[in-house]
Structures are given as structure tokens and as C-alpha cells.
Image (cartoon, chains in turn brown, green):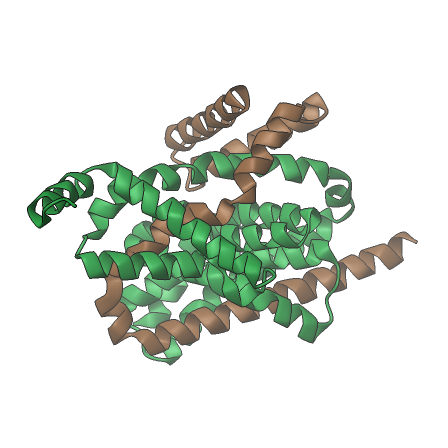
Length: 117
Length: 245
């Protein structure tokens, strides 16, 4: 647990340092994820300890968004003033994005499958 | 029974320490999760939504300012970083399927990322949102820290973007099942990927509750969309700016 958590933090740290060093617009944790993925592919998979820790951490991923969500308190006024455009944009765009992405991926992967056969 | 003055003293002490913010966050989430479980993981009983609503209500009732709360809650917030890194592990287990679908995934990613940004700004504009709000909406489909970074760079309000990102995540987690049912999409890899592009980590959390494959593809989509959106939105900015003025 401790070793695995340290490993995750080390990869995050490497990601943050690279992001700062090269002034990348990609966040450090995402770079850390990409690097860890490459490391796992080279090494042939995670240790059971790392697998368990990741599972524990990801099982309650939703919890980690709660503090930022409570930040809505800071924007009651703007949200009150602009509730209609905000609601329309968020609902509309989220539904459209899910539908478009799923349809494009579904169609393309079906085509790739038939082509491969 | 302690005197009211004593209770007030305890309250003053507790409200100044990070312990309270952290504890109520965990309690609210566990209460919300219990309800979510009781509702057989129905998407409408989203635990982020329930926990945030309970906490906002509590903070409003006790007159606690957000920064005081965040002093404690930041310890939970901090774990977003290592959790993002940890997404590499489920992703690795999907490596064979990932290889087989690489081309379609990349194409769907770029289309999805553009759709998310353009449709959010277009609909907002159509309904008369202000310029700062429109710029805060543009990166709403990517994970919180990067969305805040993009908003700052293009002239939006980062803290508003954080809220819009969370709301988008909840909306995706709540609606995805119904969209897939309507469109007849059954493949868990496709379902996971689409919710990850549209609804980042909250969508991913929801996808993991459906299946490990959906979760892994959602995590992949969330990570890749963070990269693509961070590159695309600044490029789209001149176009967006001309459009929203």
C-alpha cells in the first residue's frame, strides 16, 4: 500500500516537473499516467500491491470531486443570473457529446472489425 | 450537558481546524453512497450530486465560508492527482483491446473533443450567456485541474469552470445509460469511451461501477481528452472569440 502510493506520487511528481519544465498545457497527473502506462507495458504489468492500491483509490473516485463541487457556493450569483444558458449548454452539450462520440466510435470499430475479417 | 457558551467555544475551535471540513466530506459522501447503493446504483442517485447538495446546505446553514471548508477538504481534493496516475493500471489490462481499436478511438476522440467544446459554447451563446461564462464553458468536458488551467489561459473564470466541470460530470453519469439505450449501443468499450470524453472522472467513476472494461476505456478517454482539449481549445480561441463577441 505505502510503496504503491509512493510510486503513484513519484510518477505524478515526474509529470508535474516535466509539465513545468517544458511549459506544457497538459496537466502533470495526466503525463504521470502516460508514463506509468509505458512503464507497465515495458515491465509486463503491475505488481499485485500496485493493482490493489489503484483499485482502492479508483473505487471511490467520485468522492474526490466533492470538494471542488461544493465550490458552487462561490458562484450562486452568476449561476442565478445565467441559469438558463448554463443549464441548456451543459445538458445539451453533454448529451450531444456522449451520443456523437459513441456513434462515431461504434461505427468505426464495426467497420474495422468487418475489414479485419 | 455543556453550557451553550462552552458549545460555542468548541464550535469556534473546530471550525478553525481542517478536521471538520475533512470529516463532513467523508461523512456526506458515505451517506450519499449508502443512498446510491439503496437505489441499486441508479444513475439519478449520483453520489457526487447528493454529497455536494448536502454539504452546500450544511455550510449555508452554519454560515461557513467555502475557503474554511476547503482547508479540510483539500486533503481529499489532493488525491485526484495520484488517482489520475492510477488510471494507468486498468488501462494496461485493456492493452490488447486498445491496440485493436487504436484508429477508431483516435478518430472518435478528436470528434468528441471538438463536439464538447463547440456545442457548449454554441448553445450558451444561443441562450445569451455572458462572454466570461462562455469562455468558462469551453473546457467543461475535461478533468478539473486541466479545465481550470485552460479557462485561465483563454480568459474564463477558473473557479466557475471547476463547478461547470463537476456538473458536466454528474450530468453525463446520470444520462449516459438512457442515451445508450436510445441509440442501441451495447459495447462496454464504446460506452466507457464516450462517457469518458464527455464527462471525465465522474463519468469514469460511474463507468467503473458498470464494468471494469467500461471504466478502463472511460479513464483512457478522460486522459486523452485532457491532452487533446488542452491543445485544441487554445487553437480554436481566435475563432471562438470572433464568434462570441
